[in-house]
Image 1 (cartoon, rainbow, N blue to C red):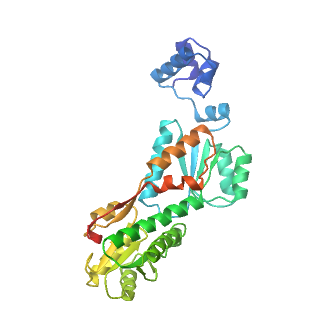
Image 2: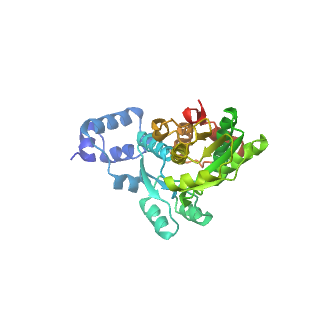
Image 3: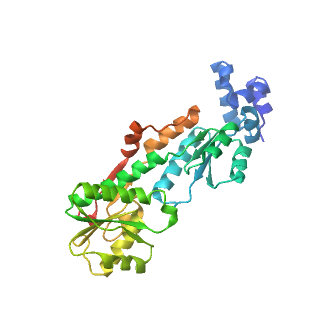
Length: 320
């Protein structure tokens, strides 16, 4: 196995020089020396150890992403994939951890000396303060911004259904408690838009993802064309199947739109209209803050940037 001493010997520099350049202190040396050491290390297949880098820098190459207890659907998977790939290009490793309260999680984070923590779940002020006191760079979760995005999703669903000629609208959300973060705000977006635009807003349906519950929910539908704004594509698929079994025409009697633009929506018969969520802009911004060490702040006037990544994908379930 190649050692730093081997690299130093071939490059004609000291072992200390190799260690410092490969552990982030290249600014102390000339560009020629830095290029020589890095080229030699790459040619010899040498990589500094994680323990050595952590000791030298005071922090590791690990970024811990705290995942909330929600369904790991397509948008979240895409977000994590983009974040992991982007961090890898910067020489950092993304470690996923299910968020939970208590000292056990805090101690585990501090023990790893992470480069940063991305809190996709909301930490308490006490938890955040403790981590920061230990020198951990915490990129926080912003409930206000997330709520605004979820309300806009509901607005877009309702607007599309209205454009397609549905004057009655109903929001459909799952009963799963893991969806408590986003579901209420998406429902609010649907009902707000419907109320402002003189649509008949029907009472929200809450269903489990079973054919029995989806079928039962349809008993409450009134006569006339009804547009269903579903929490995600899985809920939309359940409602499309139930509507077809009840003899409703989709989209003639019932229009359905989901969220996520998942493979399920495209593979379904009929294909399901949906809201696409583009994570690329947000992830690029997040990685920039992680690398710079600056604190990410989401101001009210910048929330529109997060909303701009939403797009209606019109398909057969709404007559497109």
